[in-house]
Image 1 (cartoon, rainbow, N blue to C red):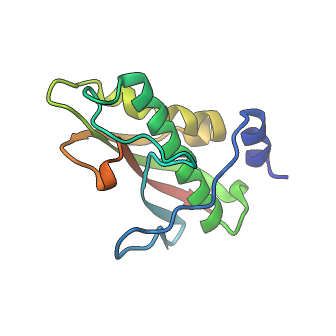
Image 2 (image 1 turned 120 degrees about the vertical axis):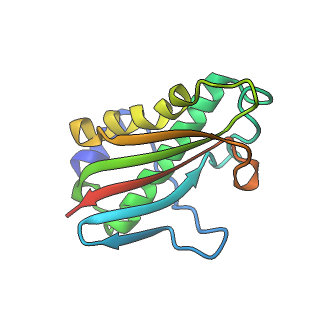
Length: 153
């Protein structure tokens, strides 16, 4: 088992099958040593977290939703690296999108759910640049979506 897989086990995390695209795009593209991963929404085996943060979804639930996005990103990393997560050199950048209500402004704290996971799993290699944006709507009414750029070997 790889170091990263060992760390996931320590955290009690099981990666899902990577989500298939819902439109005309691919889940990831590798350009040189950079892996560009399409946005992963806050979906899991139970259906995930849907709704508008600050209205139907509270901040703590939204932060857990962002963590789900991170788990889905790591599943895509594993698929892109032929099952070997130790090929991940660095999480370079995350782009976080929160379906936010008109009076919800804690967007960065929500996206921390994904950012914190990257550091928990990859250590210093999980520290990244980031954007965190509140948006009117996300695909299929999911509460959070996060995309990533990852350096791989």
